[in-house]
Length: 429
Image (cartoon, rainbow, N blue to C red; front, side, top):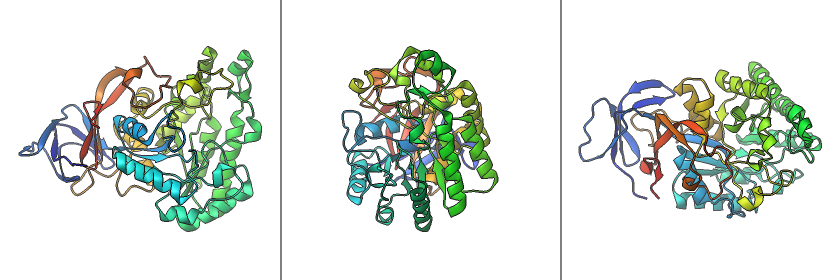
């Protein structure tokens, strides 16, 4: 696809190295000049006055649903949603049909992502064959074709011995296992967080302990094996405390939290609106405050969307029958900025360079904005106040609880591999 030669003029550059006022010239996909008051010359002048120019975002947790569930999302529609949200790279979760547990499926996802060309689609691999929790996938074969993150997302690996063996293999290969922390025997039939609200509604509850037991187990397995473990979508106060202690011990433990787990609590389920049903469930305000604190003090490394599209026919079922999950890519920045009181640099770190390191793609994404680096950039209007228009969503699904909710800050342009793939809030392809 054709690259643009452009000058991003008048913006404030914020990256891992700091903040400065500068114009950014991009030619042939590379940042070629950074200075104040540059002349566009023959390059396209892109006026970004009043905006932040940042490294593109990296999502560690995206469900693209392809292959197998094109009625919910495709790699094309999901990539477009990602680009609109400022993402230049996403890690595609493996719970597709067929599962991303073999080279053929992983290569299909990679190839389709390249064909679409709106963002860097990096497939994860499942830890076990078919995500069934009994037999390990061929880690070495998948790592050889570029898989860096392995997870059975949607299911936690229940067998402690199998998880230990998986961590030992992963450590030898230099890849990362990401765990969906849920002790399944404690959550059968659960609809929402187990607590006062759940009791009042008479709905089956999902105890916080079901997450925390597995968080504790995998921290200890990481301690035993010396291998890194990444903990997906943390949602409880105790989970954050456990990770904080693990990091204080110097363990190779990283963690993520979603925008919805810092903005929505379990009382939203009193409406019986299935858009608020997620896995793990929305928790209490006390949990929300501790997850936010974990993001602010660095205990939680990254904001990850857990973008989980479902078609209306699925979400329109009764609450106990509807699948869990909500959209996240197009609203992540706005929700996070609205609910986290931190500097722009800290927020961008949680959405860009820190997840890039966990995903093993820090050579291309989350890079400092300096001469010679690849032009994977997000241009943000920090003063934008906006509401989600469901008719304007790029995703094939519409299951977001943020329709009509006022959000702060919005992506104006996204530059991927030196091409403007989002211009003035609209996808260019």
